[in-house]
Length: 382
Image (cartoon, rainbow, N blue to C red):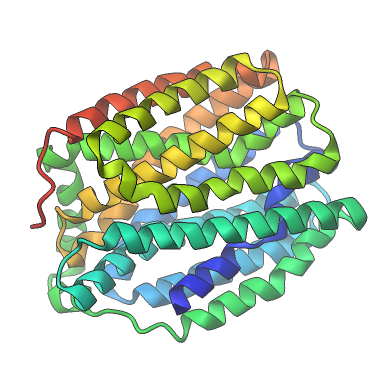
């Protein structure tokens, strides 16, 4: 429960709903937004894998607390930002937060499930519940952010988020961390690092899992980092941005709750077709209501598949390598997101965001193909 409450409070930040509008108000254009995403991704590349290994060897709660502190600094710097360099510094701290968050929460939930139930059969249930909680937080934050921006100022959304983030950090202090990873870690740090990379890169059975996780993560990160660009291009009224963000963010909740349904092969195949259809909608539609429906369905499917793939991954890993390996995979995703986001925003700036969406279609095809291979392999725990 402390973990869920903390994740909720860290998911509320009101500025998420209007961030790209705020950025354009202080001088950003589409190309510089892409540059910002690339810089943030590079920061995550540098931090993610070391933070995952640190979580496995030291304390996952400690790493989560450091992440919460980074989010707090991102909000404070955001309040003070009046130009591009200052705001990019804010997103650097947000990138550190995201890197520390990535791979840690799902790893600790997997170990709690093993500790409490003796197996991982309920892992999708608990991780799905975490995503549902995050989704509710995103929706509340989006609606609140839209109201604050419409009736007061966009800058105030950053200021009012700070106390909520601080409370999220305090809740983490009440979490009792499982000790499975501590019991297994005894090797020197460099051997541990070598084992972490080998667990991901040298396990042929995990290859399609890794490719599909990375591909879906690139799509999901692009969706939530740049979703507002489609609505800006479609000339969506300012007053609708809070509602639109709330609907898009609610896909976290719905995807988390529906994840167990996608274990069924038939329903899983339906979901893969929905991903292709929604990306095509992002290419051809100019109606912001259709774009909103497509982004909601796309986010829902990507979250659900992320939960399923997370279990497939953790079932093949020992606890001592769990957070580190998740971070390695997240780092791989970020290494692809950097050039893809730069390319996507470059094409969007030169032509439009709709033409740039063909890049997302290519990523989707690769990820879906890899996922189909995961359906042919066993899903037993090591």
